[in-house]
Length: 169
Image (cartoon, rainbow, N blue to C red):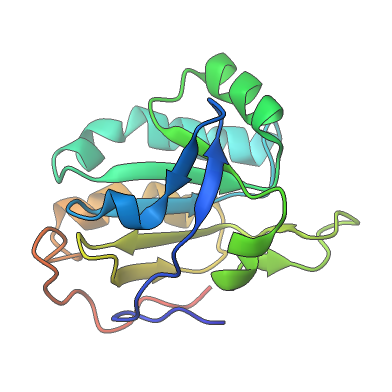
């Protein structure tokens, strides 16, 4: 399944690093940023999520809720969250249902089968995809806060239209 600008984001309920269920539709009313990453404690993912941590004020300015999603267990995500002092919630897609629904299931990454591809989806306050960014690595993800500041995701709070297409992987 490919998610394009203007499509409704698939709903899900995942366990957080705090062992609490988080349901996407319960986040309606504010923008949501879904950050898919292959695995906690890897060097690239650590750099990537720490870049988000250090940029969190930019997300807060538009009242965006940020979630990191990987197939790690919530035990691993809790340790990673605490070690890196992340100010956002990490979600465990251990059963790999959400990464499949969002089209970011990685069949094989250097022998690791069934992990998440790197990807970001910005959803408006109604759960509509306004900014899908495919697996290009942390450099693209680090630019996301700048994109938000420049208004490339116009209408995040009201459900207005955003960019025509940002999919490119």
